[in-house]
Amino acid sequence: MKVEFRHVTKTFGDHRVFDDLTGELTFDHVLALVGPSGGGKSTLLRLLAGLDVPDTGTLLVDGVAIPDRETDLRVYRRRIGVVFQAFNLFPHLTALENIILPLEKVHRIAHTDALRRAQDVLERFQLAAHARKHPAALSGGQRQRVAIARAIATRPDFLLLDEPTSALDPEMTGEVLDLIRELRDEGRSLILVTHEMGFARESADLVAFVAGGGVAEASAPDAFFGQPQRAETRRFLERVFRY
Amino acid sequence: MGSSLRQYFFDSPDAPAPRAVRLITVLVMAGLLAAFCWSVLASATSNWDAVWAYRAVFWKGWLLTIGISALALVTSVILAVAVALARRSTFLALRSVAQIYIEIFRGSPLLVLILFGYYGVANAIGADNRLLAGTLILSIFSSAYIAEMIRAGIESVGKTQLESARAIGLTTVQTYRCVIFPQAFRQTLPPLAGQLASLIKDSSLLSIIGLTEFTFAAGQVNSATYSTLESYFPLLIGYLVLTIPISFLSRQLEERFRYES
Image (cartoon, rainbow over all chains, first blue to last red; front, side, top):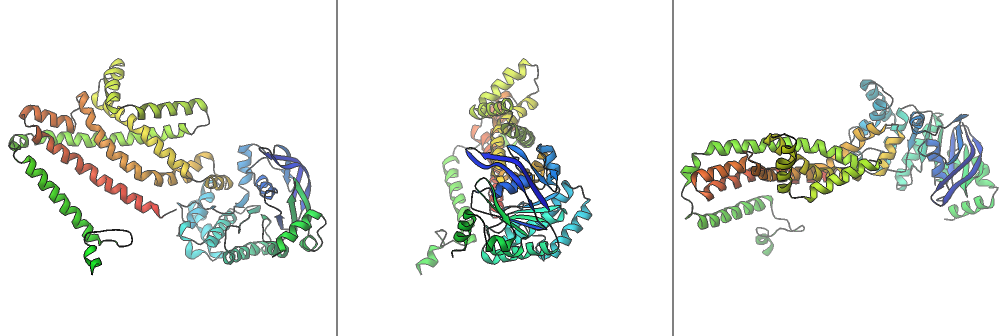
């Protein structure tokens, strides 16, 4: 998979997140975006998800430019699965209904087919017993797994995960990371923003350090964590691994 | 020992009284209050037979009150959804109109609106159907309150929900229909039930334009029998019979939705 940036600028108020960002990231399946808070990794993911548009410049995924008009973006977003940090699911719908909703409403799949597909994916993720529960009755880890199941069920080209475990306690973090690793082993393409350095090191094909208005450094995990090239990357990793 | 006696008279979160005790207390106190009222008023009431003869008038008026209230509830909810959406519009002119609508109709006394609406506006445009005009005025008055409830309900739906809806590719209309309204509805239902009770009570003011609803019926009976207390007493009971179950329902809805989501 290849992600390209051409003169991308993005500002929020006075804060310039990306300043004329140009470059490309090529990786087999899994790209991990790491970096300090406010460094722009979530913004980058939102641009890739088509949830935000850059002020100027273009992003390309596998050579195709991401559109900038809302109607085109909506079509673009259908091909992507997005999972946020928390509150992904709709609280008034059961786990099963949450998965069926986009299948029926967005992808126009007949109810019986959508139902079967949703049940299949819940079963595969060992969530079948929770199909009829509302999100409030699920644990945080189960909720995130249902959210990932919903994203997968639409058979997206690739998945975008924005700190999917940051709101979870350690035990639940494990069950969600296990699931993400399963997806990697199936050969799915995914880009995730994460603070789980161990997971990034073990499961990513490419790790990108996003800070200071762009992608400061990107390399394979062994090189990234073994011999970081830039001083700011080293400082960041030292801080993260201090304890 | 003290605590076992205490629980028949006191109820607090850490020492709750049994359910039966609470219910019996309500009934006993209601009985005592009724007895007190009776002792005060018994000497003054004597003409029940005359009023009883007009029971059909009461009955018809009561049914009309229910009909007006039900119709006004439906109409006002429809109006209120439109006003609430307009109130949230990004188009400034539309939003301003919704804002003005809400402020004017919440800020004016219903009695004034009825007089102005019927003798002023309805007569001016040649629409003199009391029932339609009255119900519409009541609906408009009520819709201004309900619009704000619906708006609060819509705004209680988190931003992250809208983000999720966008991320999975729902259109704006689908987002409202599948994500926002179902959640906003749960938020709005308890206060909406309360508003229905207000609507029923407020409909009594329509008697001023000669609509033969419950209050007007009681007035007619009073003029015919000259027994004021006996004529208006059924009125009190008739409204309470409608509003008490609704306030009960409203509280139950609140309980039910509190723990979900």
